Length: 264
Image (spheres, rainbow, N blue to C red):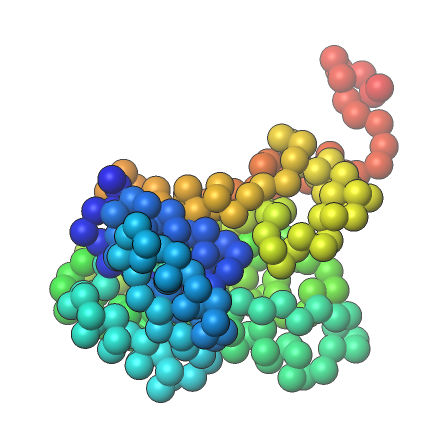
């Protein structure tokens, strides 16, 4: 088991990618603190893991410093340390920039960026004291290229990527590694309705080099690797789990292709 004896906090782990990461960590031997603003999903995930592994549920609002402190205190009281933090909590409030209400812009910023900062700071202090730790931020391909009509989502994910690098450079001397995962098109309960539309699904599949939509489990596999000793020489890295979406940018651009030195 890759994470035997480790303790992990995964935010936004009541459902979706966060849940998949928490389940994968537990399967690899970690004790997992499940945290979601939705107490019902947080409790349900922890209960499912607890049937075969070790997990507790500590619902929290990552936008509130007091709630973050309570979450970290609960994890420390139960397990005595925190080895891994996964900042996954996020909420997209879509809209065109010229029409987006300030509150909608701020909601995504508060959860995805401020919340990640508050969690990183609170957990990081315990890691600095122990001189050991691993922080994984769930960014997005949208943090590398703009996602139109998605409000502040791309801005937040780009900021999270930069925060990953800042943590790596400031806290490396304490034995702390920080890396980010940038998923591409991933099928989750939250995106299921969209991918049930064949036109959307086929169009997005064509934007990847592998010709399909990814799964939460595939993101979780990378999260396990980055939390394990197999990635011990990685810090400040941004790892794309996108089926070649980023490198396949021009696949979706209309026009002829070069072939054998000629235009086809």
